[in-house]
Image (cartoon, rainbow, N blue to C red; front, side):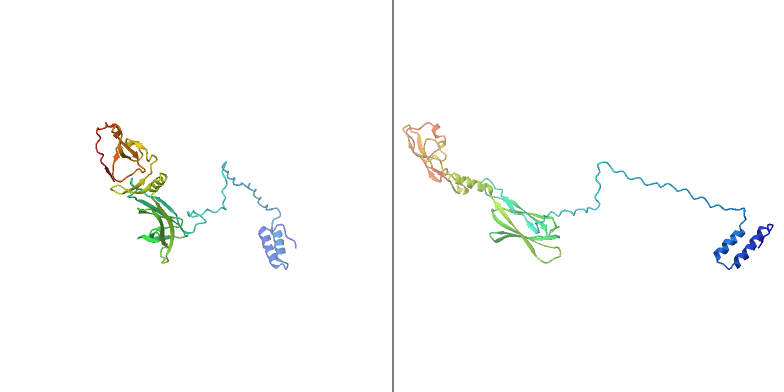
Length: 292
């Protein structure tokens, strides 16, 4: 088919349309032919230029402080310490040694027993009763209301006043809050009159006799003297007493030192400072001195 050159663009375009519609071939070939026939020979459509690739700008790496140790993100935080060692379980009672505080005669004593029990049961516990035993006999019982609550790893403390020496046993009763089951822990308590014990030890060293002496019957030691039987003319000449025996040829009192430091009863003794006094002639009758 010939196409006239003087045909206007409108008639040319209208001619191409029926050709596209009636072509028995595939749609792709018909579209290609139609476009080829319809496109003006002098017009060329250029593809738009591809945009220039943008430079890839990477994020600058964070600088690490000098001397900083990197954190170990996989490490798990340590659990809080409970105050109990792996070998401790249940309630742990601490043994107690107490020294009594006494007066100069080692009597009228009093001190506090610092009881302490540590909770290693793994849960809260309440302390509701305390019992004290002497030689297997209960001598004290205390009920706590409200009962103190002790957390796991915590400690219960109580100060108990006491006046006599001896070996005791403290029994602390506890249970979990809201529970009715009864549990207990026992601990040893030693109460000592250390001042009295030291005095008795010194009494043994001097081969003395421990007992109660004087009107007030105060306890003490009657030590054996090291100068027993020595001749004396003054009470200061002896460790104990200068026991009067006679007047010498100068009318001075003369005696011998006692075997023990303490003596009781009515006894004739040479008093301290007697040798500094002027002898009396004739010497007087020696009168006894009553000692308690």
